[in-house]
Amino acid sequence: MNGSVWMKQLIITSIVFVVLIAVYVIVSIINKKKGRKNVVLRVLFIVTEIPVTAVLAFLIYTAFYYHADLSVQEYLVSDANVTVENEPDWYFFDGAGEGTALIFYPGAKVEYTAYAPLMKKAAESGIDCFLVRMPLSVAFLDPRCADRIKEQYDYDKWYIAGHSLGGAVAAMYCETPGNMDGLIMLAAYSIVCLPAELETCAIYGSRDGCLNLDKFNECRKNLPADAGILTIEGGNHAGFGCYGPQDGDMPADITAEEQQKITVDLILNFIGN
Image (cartoon, rainbow, N blue to C red):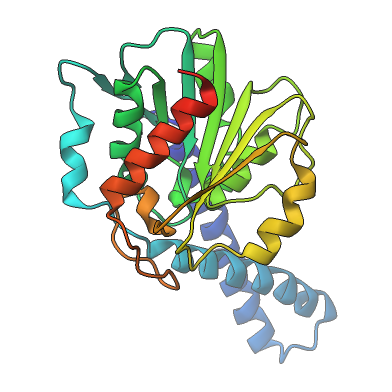
């Protein structure tokens, strides 16, 4: 074990799952021998059967995810412009910037390194970036990871961003006033009411087939009055990362590289770098 929080959570989840399975099997055997006449055992059987099924279904769901393209490997190594550090729970892209940092939560069931090109390009432009590794590639399993990053690094201004579910979880993190100076949601919306003073920007592609635009528009009321809503013409849902086509998405009219370059420019303009 490397000591990272996500690994500890995964181990604890596995232990709980094994215990539930053991109880489930024992109760099943006892019930079978007793013909299920014991009410207490029948209740215990039902109580264990539901969580076992739920946990198993979730583990199966998260076992199939979008893998990062092999091309991202070149963005995970240091060069003359950006130093890349591989920490247990995140990649740190340390560029020329000193006062501003961006924490990024990846989309659900997407290998987090798929966003390395986006992060490195932002770091080259003066925003140090932290690309978070989420447990089972699901952001809501470690929504407070940003706390640990802020405890270890010192910056004047902190921004948080996220793609899809990662963006929604990032928004939830910002619900508490003062947690962040700004929020950037990529193909995402906020289900919580955000502080009026929070600098907020939502970016999505015009060819996004996964984002629920009805829900997106409905949730605009949760954003600060001066929040920016920006559209990337020709961009789609998967284009913010490098992990190939996504189920339900529409084909993009621009390349993922072009979409990411536009995204970095929009983020730089939003932050003011």
